[in-house]
Length: 342
Ligand SMILES: Nc1ncnc2c1ncn2[C@@H]1O[C@H](COP(=O)(O)OP(=O)(O)OP(=O)(O)O)[C@@H](O)[C@H]1O
Image (cartoon, rainbow, N blue to C red):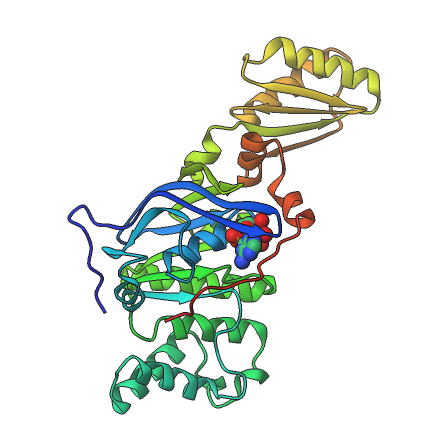
């Protein structure tokens, strides 16, 4: 089904998109005034800690939740007044498993395709194509409940694609998968994007996932967009992290002083016990120069690592918190759903 795009190729446009939930006497402002434009063919990741508002945004864009304020157009249709048209234009794979548990994978795909109005022959052909594309052909005759987590998740994505949407929303597609299955699913998503030019919007709290597959990373925190760019550009604003280890505290003090005196003003130097950490552009060069200087000053470096910035460093720089740690400690709650998936 083809999507109806604006002349500029924008497929998602939101203005002041807002959602609050009332829980008892408390109001949770899950999404606060989002202004977004996403173009045809982009692969966008919404990245943020648990509870940041990623799923709520996706659920508004896919018409599952009505916004409290603001507006959103998806594939050229309004998510409130043209819900059906939006739903017909998109694929949506939610966090839970969409597939029925006792159905066989192949039958599930065929029934979904039939539900979208395909003939029996076309539905079977579509199911076989999707099974092949997601490496599921050999498992297609098994009841869904017997599939592994990774196979089930791939089937979910295949189901979301039955009607060949050119815009696909994936809510945490790889959460709960082991690294191998996660990598496998990421490959399928990238292939879908590259081969079919499908616009893909996914949510994730895996930094590496956003970094590896998205053309554009929209970092969300407390219901707001706090950064929006390619992963490379987001990271390029930060320096490399150089860690130097010394035999004793005194040498580390000398090293910290030397580094602070010799590095550009935007570099940062911290010392903790026998370890000095430096955040600076061109970390390898910085480290090499320092190692030489320090040997001459009687403070030889014993251990050295140079790490390039990650998206976690970007998040830390923006919020003062580590996204990795936020994910480990922040609880999440979703307890009400409005409407149902297409
Ligand atoms: N149906 C709901 N009723 C009440 N509060 C809700 C509901 N859905 C979400 N929230 C709250 O809104 C905030 C944003 O939640 P949301 O699920 O959008 O975050 P998220 O970034 O997708 O997190 P996660 O990665 O855990 O899915 C959270 O504080 C959450 O508890």
